[in-house]
Image (cartoon, rainbow, N blue to C red; front, side):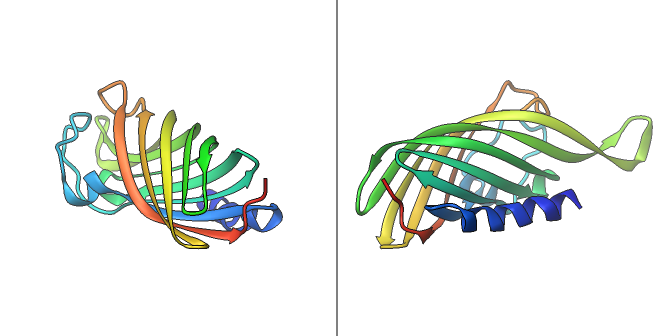
Length: 172
C-alpha cells in the first residue's frame, strides 16, 4: 500500500507545479557489473531502476523518487533538493542531496527459512547533468554518494544514466 501511495505521488506531483520533469534511470554498475561493489558480501547483478519526479523553479528543484533493485533485494523511497549550477538550452548541471527510506528483505538467524522486512534511513549527495537531445527529452547522468547503514561500508558511490522528460517548460 505504501508503494502504491509513493508511486501515485511521484506521478501526480509534477502536474501541480509550474515547471516539472520525470526521470527514469538505471545504475550502470549493478546492471552491467563494471566493478565489484565492496559494500556487499555478494556481488548482486540486475536492473537497478530509479523513477524520479520533480519540480524546478529558478535555480532550485524538489524531487521525489522511488528505486528498486531486485538483485539486491531492496527498494527505496525518498525526497531531495537540487541547486542548478548551470542551465542552458541544451544542458543542465545540478548538485543536490536527499533522504531515503530503504526497505530490504533479509533472512534472519532466528528463523533461517523466513524473510523479514527491515527499514533503514539513508542520505545521499549527487551531481546531475542533463543533455537535452530534443527540447523536452534529454539524457540524464548522475553520480552520487549514498550513506546506507544496511551495508558494511560507510557508503557507496553510484552512477546512473537515464531519460529525462520535461512535462512543462522550466521558468526562471
